[in-house]
Amino acid sequence: MTAPKILIRLAIAIILAGAGYMIYRAVGEYSLDEVMASLRAIPVAHIAGALGFAALSYLCLTCFDFLALHYAGKPLTYRRAALASFCSLSIGHNVGVAALSSGAIRYRFYSRWGLRAGDVAKVIIFSGLTVGLGLVTLGGIGLMLYPADAEGLLGLERPAIMGIGITCLTAPVLYLALCQFVRHPLHIRKWSIQLPTSRLAVPQIVVGTANFGCVAGCLHQLMSAFEELAYLKVAAIYVVGNATALMSHVPGGLGVLEATVLYLVPGAGSLAALVAFRVIYFFVPLAFGLPLFLGSEYVLRRRHSGHPTE
Image (cartoon, rainbow, N blue to C red; front, side):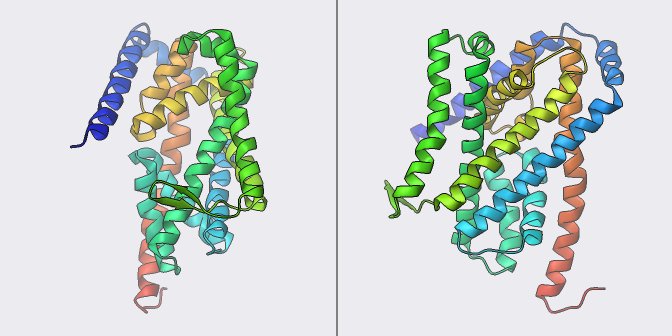
């Protein structure tokens, strides 16, 4: 095993250990009865709002694939892009290492619709870049408006937090400039990357930011059932937790996101909101995505083999 891989695994182990310790300290303060009572206390209107934001998030994710297919030069109908996106991400979010797990499912769909491995790789890269752009954009907004919460978690002074926020917001602006003026491939070591046109880059940033805005909205609906919290404050907390979860490659960020939120907003209500959030955003889509994928596998395999479907 190479040194970089060892360092990466060590970093992941440290993140997981830290998250586990933080959860142990936070959860240990509340009894199961308190958590269950808090879950029952979430109003139906907040549950409905959370479900609505989760649905909007997955709608944004289907646009990731739709735009990515145009970037790869293999545009498909929105219906096909949405099917591949929802099946792959509803499963990939729960399995972990989403780029690989969801990428494998994407390949199952797109290869049957005429895309080669290189085309699917472009779709995955574009979608991953959209995730990064959305995360830094929403994160920059949240850090600039609520730096005190990031200070408590990151242990940095206010000027450093503001500097990080400005850097985050500079990234999408720089990306747009590169897409507008650089039309030749960028070479990074052995990799050659062709940037999308600005006509694709603008909706890419918009839909990437909107996606994380909807996920934060889902969490906000549940947390605000227990105390008054500004939406952008919850968004800032979610971005910090999600960034840490992405680095850990834990399935669905399990434990890492919870540790971050409970550190910043402790309480049995927050723990109950996180349990409800995980069910609504991860498990409910999985309950639809897995049967849909299996059914699609059956139908597409029959069509590919030349057998008519009923």
